Amino acid sequence: MLRANPEAGEAPRGPERTGGQDVAILLATRIGLAAFMLLIQAMLAWMLLPEGRGSYAVCIAFGTLLGLLFAPGSMEGAQYFVAAKQGSVSQGVAAALAICLAGTGLAVVLALPLIHSDIAFFRKAETRSFHLALVLVPLVAFSLAVEHQLAALRRFGRLAVFSLLRISANAVGILLLVWDRGLGVDGAVLAFAAAHGVMIAVCLRDLRRHCGLVLQRPARSSLARILGYGFRYHLARVGEGVGPHIGVLVLGLMATQAEIGLFAVASALMLGFVLIPNAVGNALLPRVAGREQPELVALSARLVCVAVAVALAIFLAVAAPAVRLLFSDAFLPAVPLLWILAPGILAHCVAGILMTHFKGADRPDICSWAVCVGLCVNIAALPALFPALGIEAAACAITAGMVCRFLALAATFKRMAGMTWFRIWLPRRGDAQFLRKAGRSVFRR
View (cartoon, rainbow, N blue to C red):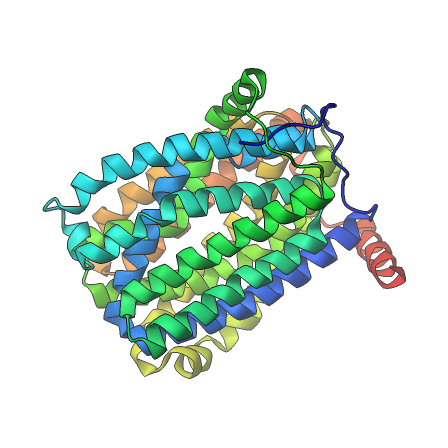
């Protein structure tokens, strides 16, 4: 466990930068990550083919979501605790580690009987692959927790380097274990686990050397505050984690491994666009944590909406040849899914900025119920549409759920901020001025 600094909130933040500079660093990082992710998706597609890609998808979804489900507060709760200067980074990391160890240990115990059950989902990959996926439960949960700590301290430059190191380790692991050793799905799962192990090691080393992280037992008061925030945000965290995987999870009960593989590739490609709101949201949260700034949030939402819409339009124009080049002709049936997912991804990206506002205003419960609304729509629509539409039903259901989530968040933001729809969403001359000013500050830096 980890021992705190004497004074809460004393850990040094990252170097003073403007919001534009922080966004530029984060966006450059996300672009690099997206490029590596695209490489990894292509490697998996060529090495595993649609059937193996489907088995890999269900294993990753299983291991990752268990960690999210059983570790409430370890990510956003501990992040808010440090970003709002309610406690030290040592207390934040200690509480996150305690929550991860206790929660994910329980998750593994409960998951073992499911793996050996007759549920159709667990027949979509070998039993040993699901056993290996259990290693992901604590690793992914704590890896995300320490990433959130670096973001809370605005150490975006270091987070950029470490994130690229993680995904590079994943790519190297796939080459060694899948291509060289021929371990197939098992090797791909192990490579994913090893990459998160690397992330944990380098993040903790940086926090210890530069942010005063020391070993200590988490205080009860810190755990109580972090868990209190975490439980209020927990439904949103689970929904955000389940959302990208819900199609894989439900299709795991109804579709073939090849169909799951096609959908997994399509959803992975479209979720790459979430890099834009993630970059903006991570830079925004430390600035709004503990204080409300609805005008800044509205400005960020407008800019993200335009940026994502333009990026989606460019990508969709070249989607078919890109899929053929990167993933082979076997994955061309995934192209129509990209067009169906596009409106939902746009809504999801803008909703992410609105959720940053509610997280910073200590109202994570609003995020939770909005995510639940979208998730319920998604889960209800997919089985109803699947007999008629096949795997396209998964794309339609995800889009419907994401749009409903956005509408719920937008209506609540309008009411609580006391702003009109035009004031929130109508582009202004000041938006372009803000972009120019941010761009100049980046180049000056």
